[in-house]
Amino acid sequence: MANSKSAEKRIEINKRNRFRNRFYKSSTRTLIKVFFKDLELYKSSQNLEDKEKVKKVLNSIYSLIDKGTKKNVFHKNAAARKKAKLAAYLKAD
Image (cartoon, rainbow, N blue to C red; front, side):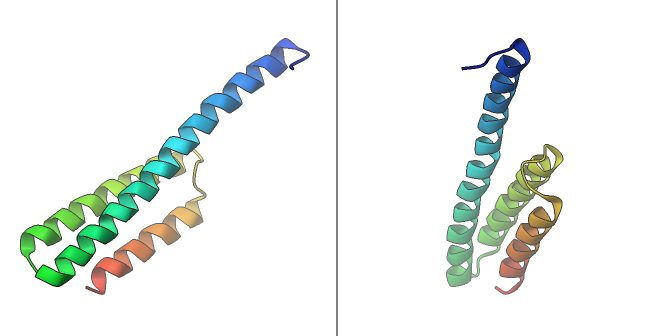
């Protein structure tokens, strides 16, 4: 239990930040799973529509990672590493 008003505020701020961090991290993980599923589909079909779908998912992953980095959910180097690995997977198709 908090002993002061500032400690109560810190508890609320930590709760808010925890939910925000959880949103960005879980959403990124979910989209990465969708990316790999769509990438496998594209590799098997070699269809241009599937490639566009993969690129669209990749752009949304980039957006989430960049926004999370701006809010200090991800470290900038970790974010760059994630983005580079995903781009390499797409390029290796």
